[in-house]
Each structure stands twice: as C-alpha cells, then as structure tokens.
Length: 111
View 1: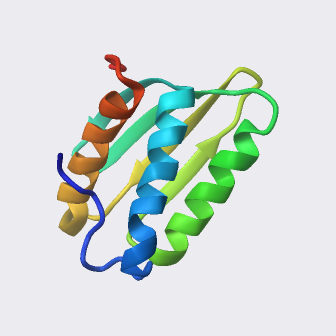
View 2: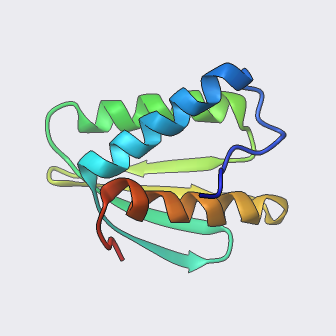
C-alpha cells in the first residue's frame, strides 16, 4: 500500500506510523463517504456525535503542525462532519495516497 507520509513531513520518523494509524482509525470508525472534486482537493464525510468534531480538529491540527502543505477545513454538523483536505500541486501524489487509505481502513467502498 502506498504511504502518504512525504519526505517534507517534520514528524519524527518513529511517530509517523502512529499518526497514519490515527487517521486509519478515524476512517474505519467514522468515514461514510468521500469525493475528489478536483486534483488537489479531497472531501471526506464522517459521522458526527459526541466528541467527533474535537477528535477530527485535534488530529488535523497536529497534522498541520508537521505537514504545512495541507489545508484542512472542518465543516461540523450535528450528524455529519465534512473534512476538506487540500494541497498544492506539488503534493498531489500525497493526496492520491490519502485517497487510497479510507477505503482500505474502512474495509468497504466509501465512494
């Protein structure tokens, strides 16, 4: 499976698999769908509920701290959270790899 951790990530190498596992857990537990409106943007739909928004915001804040090329936008709702992930053109391959993770982590088709 393609890894989405790019060389430009400043997270210590030993911690990178743990962060990927956090995203995989989020996808497995909460992902209900996704779309790719254009080549540099991915939209994820996640189930809401108690603590969901805080979990998503915490994870993307930490990811933004080590991979500044990501632009995460959280759109909360009572039953669903939309997470938009955008990158610059130089990191399109990273977004491609992230797009592969949710279906694998969720163990189902999420399109």
